[in-house]
Image 1: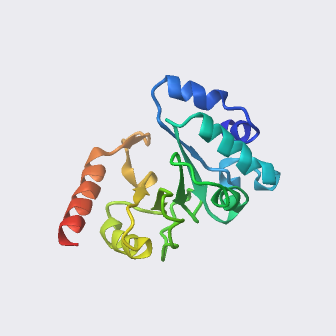
Image 2: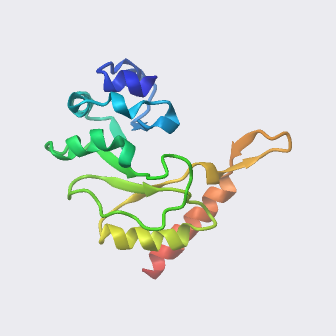
Length: 176
């Protein structure tokens, strides 16, 4: 609902998040996230752009995949804003490991990659990301692989898995 509202021009929820200290929001405007991509119009990107422009201290991360093309493609035709970045996620949040990564957006636009990343494959995937990025700075996003379950089945963020990823990033960076 918050994504639908935002893309319709209602920035109230994002402004509330900002007062709570949040500095980033991620827009997953896909069917997997209960958003109907067919509702995107040419004005949708312009609305998001105006809101991002009015909130320069808030980063807007646009999930970039085929379903969200109607948003990011229009944004790329506008003057880049430093607070709009792109998360390449063709798996649409479903955790499918990417076989390869697309070329980055134009210079000056922040971006990251995701898709099934975690302690079991991060080192190998980082090499593929770095090759695709062509020396540009990037970030990566991990979610489900950073969780473990208690005996009762409830999930929790597993700091040991996060530390294993940090170790891989540091080890990978030291070698390259």
